[in-house]
Image 1 (cartoon, rainbow, N blue to C red):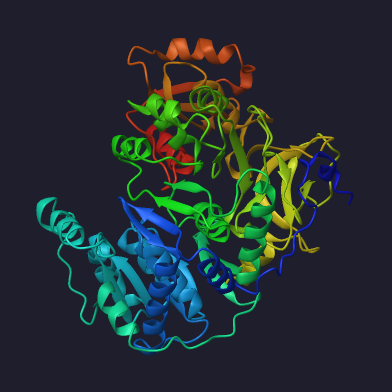
Image 2: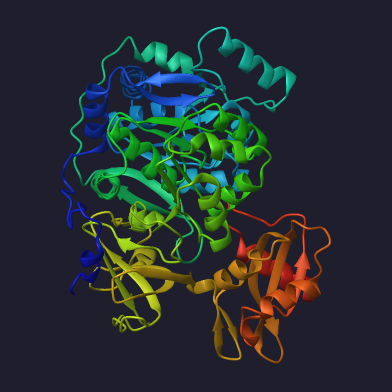
Length: 562
């Protein structure tokens, strides 16, 4: 196929990258620690960690994994942490020891945690003490033999470490009682690891770096096998795309999305590690007031997030002052993880002076596939162009390419695409066409210039009397109403049309009525796309990164009608 998108590339972006620029993420880390040793690598709650300190501490942690726990190459280590300085230390300690990392959402229930630990075969885990009780209950049915617990302030200097840990445990009572025999403290593992050598492990592009769990296109969560080669490739692709915008050793990135999610893991942590940047870790972005306060104290040049996070910031008291302070400083703002709504993008541009660039990807592609060109001046409504060394095809249900401008399933091929799903050959076979193209499960189309537009998830499409209505489009229209704060659209059974559109709304204006919102939708949507039912709620169910859980809304809507 001809890569028509290359003709639309910004000047200076190469069509291909060297996917083997580094043999592994271990080599990326060691190169950056050597080149940027005295520069700040990570900042959290006002405490900085330099590249030299990251090198030393990750070495110590990796040495203890090898010598204290007896772990060997390809063993799986789970990390169950929010955005703390301990996360990169544990991550790179495990990777330097040749181990595969299993990222775990700290907010998992006992059943969810038990399933992921058992499925991955993880034999060790590091967990924030706040969530140790959940781990205690999940452990009996897993293969985990080694537990490392950490407190929030463990990498802070004295006396701040003592104060933070005391307040979290004894003043705010944020640590439920737990008991895990044999568990070691994080600081203890670092101290013991310092006394032993980190065994040099040969790690290559085909070795597993992560088992990154995702819902995929169907069924229970599955572990996407992401190799060192996959991750290095996506780091190089992203770095090549933004090279004209960001400079090595000069940038500060705001990381509010959880590092256990692949978007922040690659786009923030790994890409900025390569660039020698300072990654400012936000531990609790749900505390919007605290988040805004942090932003007022930080001069940052880049920020990533999801539509709901940017929307919440724009609504937050005091954020207009952040916009004033950041004029001429902020270089890059990227939205990913979910569809970006026009209303949010336009407000961001007005407030911050730079556009919100939209990225597209999925866990199975490590994750980045497409991005808006960095020289874009305003919201376009599309996902941008395929990244260097990436191919995108739009295919019908039979696996045939559809003509440009026609809708089909977005399919991807490139060095960042996963090997398959962990211990799930049938799911892996379903995820790929026989010729090796990854099926994303997303519906979209490509124009004559190679720009890709996302329509919706295949499983979320609402079929009304044979016509397809896309929830993302309906939600975008609802969000254009000034009285709407949040919206989620799903299909519900209808005896006349098969399915009908149900719209769930969180009001910004308490006086907003269903009739007024229906009148608004009628201005933008043809008949079959208009909501037949509108329900106002205090909040909508969401994933940890802020995606509306349409499946849960649909189940609730169907149950309430039943």
